Length: 235
Image (cartoon, rainbow, N blue to C red):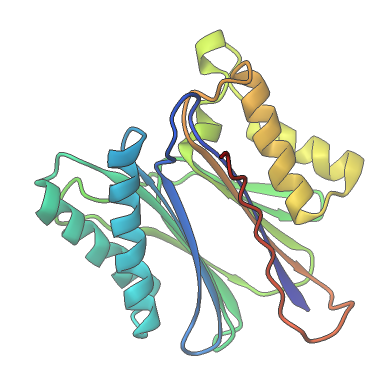
């Protein structure tokens, strides 16, 4: 089997800096972790918050700290620094080759979706952002690594897309229609979800939007690890 990771991100309309930060780190016991944080509001201040949270989390994961403990530590650090006045959502998706599982850690009111073929499960358990108190705990979901598994994670820019025009995005329906009609690659799925959210916001995103897709597929190529990143630069 092989893991494929795809990301699509866009800034809030007319804001030069995204408040969302995403990083990928190799785990000390084998595997990868993807960390996505969304700082409160948008722009430079939100970016500083999300970067602080992500750096705290990945430094702890690199030291062998469990994901849930890393999330709680990042929350405590944010609370201490901002006195509970600033929050940040957090998602950690870890492929742990030691336990042969995928561990999903969520401090984010936005749900996530787990797809197995045409079966799409929504995980929308109550979850609060980091930094609101000293007792913030994440919601943790652990899955066995299996071919055909697709995980959809996003920041709240997807959840709020279309709200100002009274047409909120039906994420589950959109995922289902894409999977049933097109059998998209992870990048195509991420791009399509982002594009639909932007359309619902009249091509002027009302918030920063990040979409993260993880898929476990049968291994069809060689054993080389690859990563491709595309960053538009506006001179």
